[in-house]
Image 1 (spheres, each protein chain N blue to C red):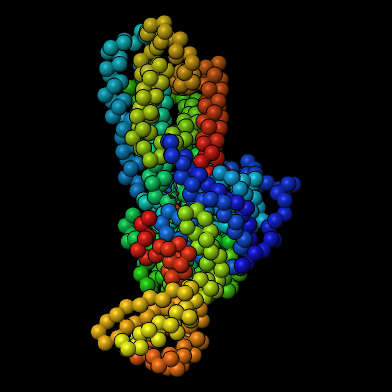
Image 2: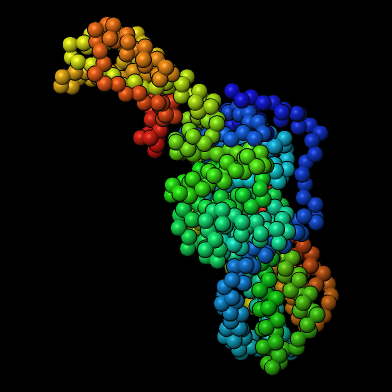
Length: 322
Length: 274
Ligand SMILES: Nc1ncnc2c1ncn2[C@@H]1O[C@H](COP(=O)(O)OP(=O)(O)OP(=O)(O)O)[C@@H](O)[C@H]1O
Ligand SMILES: [Mg+2]
C-alpha cells in the first residue's frame, strides 16, 4: 500500500536548513495498522505530509496506494483520507455543513453525504452539535469533528496525525473502537502518529519509531519490547546477601547492567530480562541456592518508553519538548 | 519486519490523474458553495454589502458633478460615467478579499484538510474568487435601480454582460490575492501591505474615479499598461448601452488577467505542495 525509498525533506528557512526527514524507507502492506511514534519534531507529520502530497519530497520517492506521489499527486489524493494535526473545520462553518461539503469534495452525492454525516455525528458523539459553528466547539469536540471529516468518504487508506490528542478517555476509546471496526469491516489500511505510548502499544500491531528524521525501529510492539527492552525485574535481598545476589543477578542481566540501591535493612536490584516472566522462577531458585534469598520481587513488563530509552538514551515522557 | 513490495511497479507509463474541464467546473461549484454558505448562514453581512456602495455613491456622486461639471462627460448625467467605475471598484474590493478569507483557513488546519481532498487546484481559486464576485450582481443591479430616478439610463442586458466580464476579471484578481496569501503565510501583515500598495495606484491610473484624460501625459501612458483601464472603459461603454471595441478590449484584458492569475496561483500551490 505504501512504499518509500529514501524519502527526504529539508526545509530551508533563510540561512538554516532543517533536515526534518532524513531518508526513510517504509513498506506498508494493505490492511496494516501502523503507528509512528517519536518525540516532538521527530518528523512524523512531515513524513505524513509527503505521503499525502501536501509537501513535495526534497529527494527520494514514495508510492501510495500504487501511485507515485510526485508523478500523480491527484491520483493519490483521490485514494486516501487524511486527518491532519491541526483542526480541519473552518471556524465559521456549521459542523454539519462542513461534513457534507467534505463528502461532496470526494464526489458523494448530496443525499449520501448527508446520511453519512449524520451517521458519523452519532459515532463521534457530536449529534447535539451539528448546527454549532466550529469555533464554538471545545478542543476535544473539534478533534472529534476532524476525525469525522476524514472518515466521510470511507477511504481505503487513512492517515491520522495524532487523532486522539485532546480527547477524553471515553472518546479516545470510542475513536479506537471505530478505527478497529473500520479495519475489521473494510480492511482499511491505517497509518497514524501518536504521543500516547499506551495507544501505540495496545492498538497498533506495528510501531515505527522515528527520531531526528530517521526510523530507528520498526516492528510489532511486543517484539520491540522483548528484543530491545525486556521486563524490568526488581529484587530485594537482606544486607548480608548483597554480594552473592549481585553475582547471580549480574550474570542473568540481559545487557550486563545491574542497578543497585541500598536502603535500611537491605538492598534492591533492578535488572532487565527478556522474557522475564519465564526466567524469574529460575532466578529465584538460583538466589536461594547462592544463599541470598529474595525478600521481595516485582516484575514490570516493558513499555514502549523503555524501548525508546534503550534506543536513544532519552525518555519519550520527559524529553518530549526536545 | 513487514516488508512488502507490491507497489514497486515502475512509474513509467502509469496514467496520471488530470482534472478535465467537467471536474474543474464541478469542483468550482463545490468550493463556491462552501464559501457562499458563510453568507447564507449569516445573511446580515449581505445587508452591509448592499449598503456600502449606496453610501459611497450618495456621498461621492454629488461632489463629482459639482467639481468636474457635466461637460466632461459629454453632457450625459455624471452618474452614467461614474456608476460603472463604482461597480468595478466594488468588484475589486470584493475579489481582493479572496486571499484575506483564505488567511484564516491557512492558520487552522482547514486549508490543509481541503488541499488533501481530490479538488482540483484551479477550482480552489476560482470558487473562492467567484464567491467574492457574486454579491456584485446584487450590488450592481441595486445601485443601478436606485440611480434611475437621478437620470441614470439602465440597459439591463449590457449591465449584465458587464458584470460577467467583471466576473472573469475577478477570477484573475482573486487568484492573485489567493497567491499573495499563500506566499505571505506567517507574515499576514505583508499581505495587507502589498495589497494596499498595489490596489490604489492601479485604481487611480485606470480612471476609475476621476477621468484620466484630465491628468498629465505620463499618467495617461501608465494607464495604457494597466489592465484595469480596459475593464473600466469596457464597463463605461456597456453602461452607456453600447457594445464596441472598448468592450472587446475589456474582455480581452479580463481573460488575460484570469489566465495569468490562475497560472501564477496554480504554480505557487504546486510549489508549496506537489
Ligand atoms: N514548514 C516548515 N518550515 C520549517 N521547518 C519545519 C516546517 N515544518 C516542520 N519543520 C521542522 O521539521 C521538523 C519535523 O517537524 P514535524 O512537524 O514533522 O515533527 P513531528 O514529529 O510531527 O512533531 P510533533 O510531535 O510535535 O507533531 C521540526 O524540527 C520542525 O521544526
Ligand atoms: Mg506532528
